[in-house]
Amino acid sequence: MSMTTQCPACGTVFRVVPQQLQARHGTVRCGRCAHVFDGFKTLATLRDEEPPEVAAPLSPHAAEPIPAAAQAPVSDFIQPVAQPEVATPFYASGAVASAAVSTGVEEMLNAEPPRKRSGGWAIGIVLMLLALAAQGAYFYRSEIAANLPEARAHLNRMCEILRCTVSLPQRPRQISIEASDMQAVDPSNPGVIALTATLRNNATVELGYPALDVILTNSKEHTVARRIFLPAEYLDAAKPVRAGIAPNAEVTVRLNLDTGDLGAAGFRLDLLAAPAR
Image 1 (cartoon, rainbow, N blue to C red):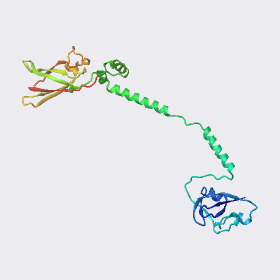
Image 2 (image 1 turned 45 degrees about the vertical axis):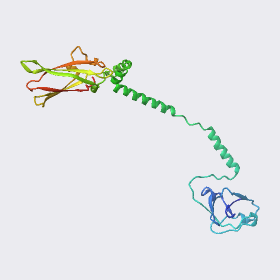
Image 3 (image 1 turned 135 degrees about the vertical axis):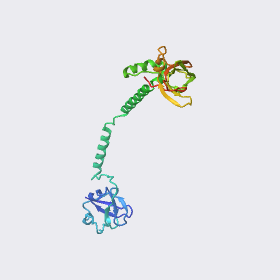
Image 4 (image 1 turned 90 degrees about the vertical axis):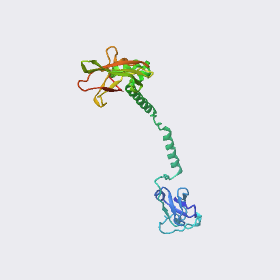
């Protein structure tokens, strides 16, 4: 049996072989009207008992008449047309095609569904959030303890493991200097002076003692010396450093200084955040 296909534009019938159609997955151009069509859609067969000239192979360069029994005009030749490689398989019979389709559907139905991986992502995100929370608790442990007193016990246990301390928050801007004074301690030694200052905690939580930035000036208000004193250097034993300043409370601190022959006549005092211990 021979195979034929028919141009849907001009009705010309062409004798074809599977290799011609498979060359470009069935897309061909009519040699008579140049119309591009799918040769598979009009594929038909001729009986072997038909006249020999009908079954003769189509010449790619010359036209060949088709008898009236084929009910089509004289054919020229067809040419495969290039297209993207989206192939439609060519089957010799409908039974083979049906079997192939059935096999593909069965494989799809029997295929194992893709495994869900959302669980792993969720666990990873939770672990990252926990790590960020732990870092935040470590770096801001003093602020957390000041604002949430009930969390101090948990933070202390954390610091026992990490070898850190939960100190009071340092907010020197919320501590004001209510009064300050400098006086000579020994009239026979004018270089020995005592500097006192009254500090007030204006915050609603307990704050750590600040560092004192002391600047000594001469009679012309020129700086002759400067030093920063940490809480452990200006507090006496009765005022532990870790106790801090209670909310809305005042404390008086004292510094005994030996200025030697600097000729200190005045001073300036500022508050700085003391480093965590």
